[in-house]
Length: 315
Image (cartoon, rainbow, N blue to C red; front, side):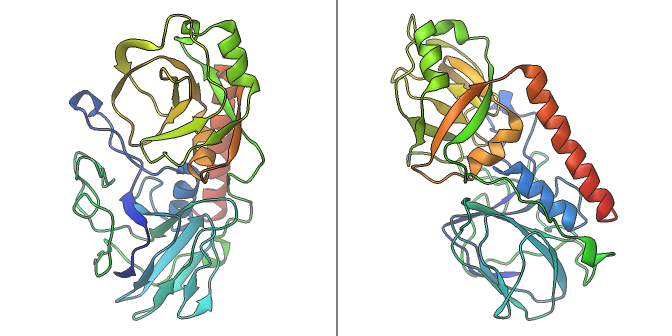
């Protein structure tokens, strides 16, 4: 596949690079794990196979041989050889076929492209995910650009039960107003005053344009602490909600720092991070406290949904 137009920020991502945070390497990986996994299931791949993550707008590319592709996430109005193509469905392309797309719409900002058989790129520290800050993984550790060439590892022209490789539900998107993010209280919740905790869970916050793959920043009523929010640096989990001295929440995402020195009021449930990853700046959100047991239940329901989709698709 040769890239004709790469879009504002297109990178190769898989499930992430694990086991190296002690050496300072963030996990990286797909921001919207739901759409990423969905693409790979429909493409008949291992769920963690590397795919393209496209931000704000999709790519244009030409294929030098037959392949099966799947596009998920935010609707980028894909076209193959000028004809409209469907999102969330396995699509066959031929030698010389041209994929084109547009800006993301439908309540999301990130889209994914999986290729049946996977991308033939070397793993770095056990992952093909692009880490832009470290300059590793993906294609030279950088975002894609025009004229880049991506080889496929085991391409095919058709998959079994192609007509069943379709997702008919509605993928998670940040379209609700406001979006509710479920938060499991953290061990540092006692750093915040009762009034600060009440403010966090009852106020509306707006996603700041100063957000990226490292962290999603919010603007709204400051969360009051009792002794300041500076702590001895400790490890950062995906979805951790840091409260810096400004009192404005920051949710740490896939390219997060490995340790941090601000108190964490809680952690956004893993199944909600895919919703957060789709938000545009200016989107309002609210935070809702839930138990760890409920967060686990949300996760297991997601796994059951994926199992059902794999069974339907013949996987």
